Amino acid sequence: MASSPPSFLSFIITLFSLSLLSASSSSSSSSPLTTITIPLSPFHHQTPSSDPFQTLNFLASASVSRAHHLKRPKSNSSFVTKTPLFPRSYGAYSVSLSFGTPPQTTPFVMDTGSSLVWFPCTTRYLCSGCSFPNVDPDKIPRFIPKQSSSSKIIGCQNPKCKWVLGSNVNCSSQPCPAYVIQYGSGATVGRLLSETLDFPGKTFPDFLVGCSILSTRQPSGIAGFGRGPESLPSQLGLSKFSYCLVSRRFDDSPVSSDLVLYGPGEHKTGGGIGYTPFQRNPSSSHPAFRDYYYVLLRKIIVGGKSVKIPYKYLVPGSDGNGGTIVDSGSTFTFLEKPVYDAVTEEFVKQMGRYKRDHGIENQTGLRPCFDISREKSVDFPELVFQFKGGEKMALPLNNYFALVTSSGIVCLTVVTSNGGIGPDLTAGPAIILGNFQQQNFHIEYDLKNERFGFRRQSCT
Image 1 (cartoon, rainbow, N blue to C red):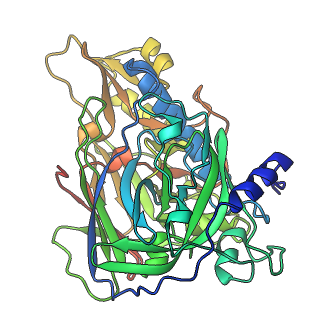
Image 2: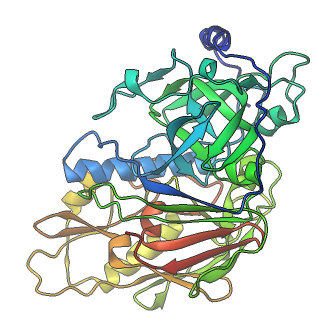
Image 3: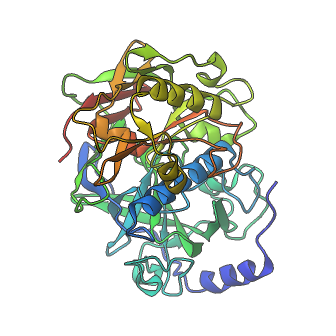
């Protein structure tokens, strides 16, 4: 059970709460949502180094750190939310959303692995450890409640308070207690607000959003697209949403693609999409697991050969462990150690003619890596994920091998625990399908029909 915030956090929370403007609800109303399309682009804060080895090591470490908190979410208390967050914005994708009256627009990292939507908030917002290249902590875009006539602090008796803080929240007529979302090397702290979410031609009043006043190592807000009631899809009553992630090769200039939100009703879908059903995690001991998008992965195929994977890793058990989730907030796909070993060993076996580069593996945190600089042609085994129903996601080469150096070193971009870059992870989802492997696919979350869809296509 997580403890209450330290006293200095309580002081800061009280201080910043005084700066929030409590006003009556906006008189605007929402019209029925049909379809909304908004730009989705790679979130490009530069990594701490231009060295490609350090960049890959950073992303690999961040992916394992992300997996650690998806697999071991904190227990609920009055001060801790039920959803983990990605500790770094690198490797993520962002959308711009407008809240307030008049609207204030800020960037958000899109995250299907968590549910709360929150933004950096108030003029006194503090971000510790956010001195990244191209990021000035004093100039991080933030929402100013005093400038919005529709901002209201959520009260303790408001049912939405329990969405985030759990059914055991202990308060009476006071404002809803502060949330503290813990993740990786830091946290974000704030108050829950009722605000108006504004799209061109459509407004959604009384939207629950987090007003974070203090964060560590998180220079952008989070748009939670998980399955919890506080998520953006749940609050808008979406029937489905879809995206197509542009390639975020390390030397690309930012290019946006579309995030499409579908309201209630029937919507035509283009042809060629393969579907597999979502699955619920049966565990009741970890509420966060219920927020994840589990899919029924049946096989991982390397070069035409099905890798032997014990059943317990493919389907979540009664303890909540096992199974596969789709996560837009993770960069590289995570495989639990036995699954990772089986997959990488098959790659090593089929690529045995090429020289392993253990030095690059140690520098990047990725393995296996191969030196193909002297090869006239290279035979890369195809990597395929096969889901329930027989649908296969055959990955393009750039989605699972990264060219590390111009001289010809390539590395497999999947990660695990105990690979020199993280703790042993044996709980929670065994496989986490990251955004690097989702690039240049049309990805669809069909919430009405409880299914996950995908189709190979160029997203540029």
